[in-house]
Image 1 (spheres, helix red, strand yellow):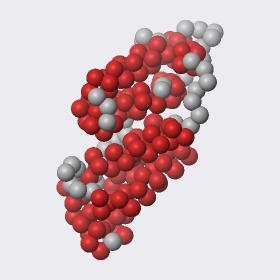
Image 2: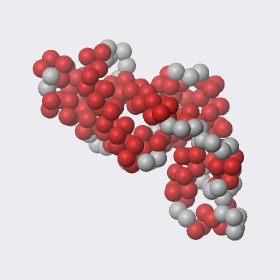
Image 3: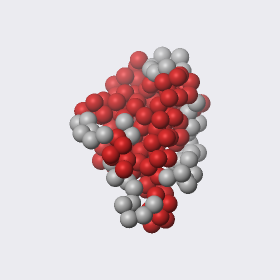
Image 4: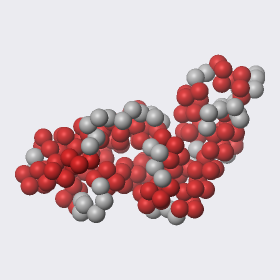
Length: 191
């Protein structure tokens, strides 16, 4: 999990938004970007895997925020509204990608060390790197739900609201993601 930024006080957001909307204040918008860019980047990066894709998607998120900030009604917090844009951009990215041509089980099997047990393999590699590799092999919806729950520690209700999925579907996606990850990493892992 990324450390929380000290400057992420959501109480500042309404004033920054008003300043931007009233005067198209670039410094106010820049402050919003600075507050949330790292958090957005890491959410995207965990979802898509590559730095280049995450950087590009993060830029697109803030372009969308700039264009649509006048549509923010304030019914929820700014970050909740921003998060919805992040999720939509991640989904758009996944739709543009080619689907996997092999089965998920075969993909997960590739992570196992052919010369040893999963535990032996984990001793040779850093656990975090292994987890990141396995997460990238999850189906996009399971990957997104897993990241939102495991890394961002969002409650299922918020995940359901952000993704437009039912509460049960979110719980099922997370459960299946965890099972696949445990299967690929072996049973002796911190999950």
